[in-house]
Length: 189
Image 1: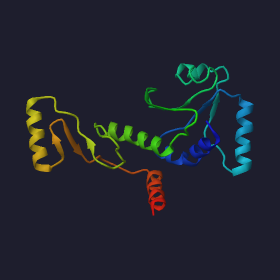
Image 2: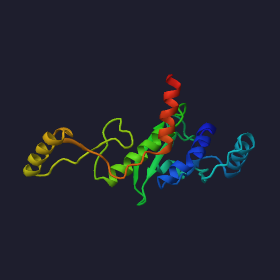
Image 3: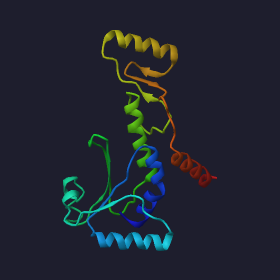
């Protein structure tokens, strides 16, 4: 992780916690190197890093998760993000090249999308933003298909039996996403 990313994750840690998510860093650097780095960040910014960083000196963990790209380097990790659920299942992998920093707002959006899709037995459409409608699963029988078409005609909530929408239940837009939207509006003015 580069310094700007670790600081951004630290500043956003409370948003991840509100989504019942724990952050963990992984680096092929040594523990003394991590300590020196975190201390330097603290000395220069006053920011304490509130999550653990695993020292994976021999790259065993990084290799198991495909984080070392031999095309790029045989010793340096690429910038990966893994969202792993409470059952230990990897649900999402984002891979950033070495020269592109991670997007905290996109990681929060993707995490929220996974949680909303799961809790609503639904899918999120392209460019989904928290609290927007979600896609209803396709009908499994012809009778359900006919019922879905009638519902779409009445409620105007889709374009066909295979693509209809509903409002997600218990939707709470993460504060960080609202702040980022406000920042975007300010920049555009």
